Length: 169
Image (cartoon, rainbow, N blue to C red):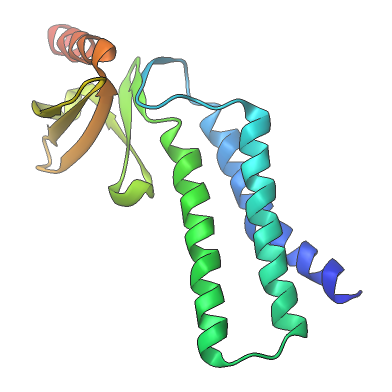
């Protein structure tokens, strides 16, 4: 197997497989009532995955064929890690929002998704209100604070869902 084939194979294992699995799992979340961010078309998401796979394959190929200093290699590794993390956060934040039984929020810097059931919400405070969106701080019964952003037109949907769960018990 030549260097390009090996590089592409490893990049597919590192980037394509995990990202497509993540998308498959995220698209199985039950219907959304209000999204925090616009959901992109599936071909665009696959384009992002292809781009990160290409960058990863190029980085691996250069590791096979180009001799460079340790500082250069670390620099390239950091760049690829930023690209990987950026695409991961772009894919995940598309699924943040208000769902029928829970909310989904992104962790700090967009890494990790947090699912919070309405019965676990203790308090909701408005942190900032901008022209098109409202930034909320949600406190859970465990004492955790979540940053949650919604377009202004969807804030009432969140409060309605929380009130329904309080009334239903």
